[in-house]
Length: 568
Image 1: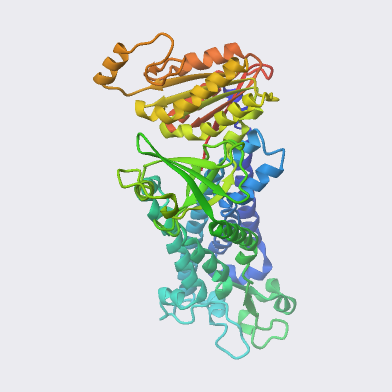
Image 2: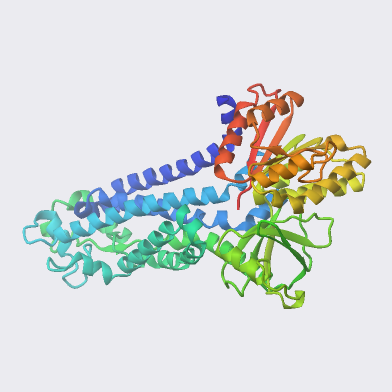
């Protein structure tokens, strides 16, 4: 099991270790450079080791700010997935974890920002102590530089009576640093799972503070508070020889007064490329927002599920993809992801939306799915569509055997796949790699089966006619029922058809025994690459991932389960 875990998780481990290694290398390399660099010797006399701590964390902060926008550039990720053959299998699954990497980088930003803030707090206090009345020696000489004509200062705190807080707030670096810190705190705290679940709108709006964050970051270094000796001064003023002769700097020709300047801002150089890329991403989204979406059909299903069928010029999709939908009459900024339930062979694209929050409830209400009078299609609210985008489910047809597992409305991603399978059977086409599909649907409410049972029934019938009944094996599990349903099932029991769904395959009551299911699949398909695809809650996801590890062989020639979870 441990061997399989290492093999299956090798790519995520490599990505995390590579990211961590670059951070550690940048931190240590920068720290050592500022500890030894001769141009900053006099700066170290005042600040000590906190100079290196501040600069090293700043470089790591710049590096992570360069990365933070890449995982959320979904058009860029879709382009990489679609144009590169190597982005299948483990690397493709890593692309599906883009939001996890986004969070990881955000933690990196938070840690380095905390180190940077604490280090500069100590720096300002040490600058202030350099102007103390009892300060003497080289420290006092360096702090007083800049009082005479033709001298450049090293200590930005000019008198002992200057407040360090005031000094920070009147400088570019201090003001922008405060703005950056507040923006980061606001973004991080509103990104917690509790906030996202209880108030997605708050999360969405506060996340756009990143614009203020990046603008402030770009100009943060413009204050040049931390200063070093200029190259010209180093040639005339030998630090090793002159550091003990500070009393003679004004008079000695061999030791002229050292000159200092701040380092050029570099944060904007790190962030420029990703910011331009993300700006292009937002331009593409705006262009797609302007494109007309025609709503061709609206269907209200049981369990508060709304089906929307739409058309859009030059819209091309693949099974397993998803789109983002915006309804300007509800919110002019919010975009929400929904998996496509239509097949590429159909002349429209569709989504099924369940009421699961303020926005979705408002959408169902706007389209008359909650008892309101149904509107004419021409008077329906306007929708904007961005996408489609690729997900892990696009790899279903690339495995010898695929196991598709859904809970509740999580079945929607598999509707497109099963429809595509139906069209393949209708056109008598053979699937080059896929030889077997196992489909599991676990649902609490029997009413939710209605809209999907029709698709399964037509697929079941068509496969039997084409002699491909062996291609699909499905099991439906009902986890919630009442006494009336039990009586109805008992009174209308039919040996040939299921009472609830009308399918040949009987509905199971309760939850699947995943140990038995995986053991049987592994036994039936030895030496096979089996893709497991899941859309549902985290608790079941952990169970299925554990099953994949447990029933995968340590022998490379044995059976291997590859776990894929739908991410947005």
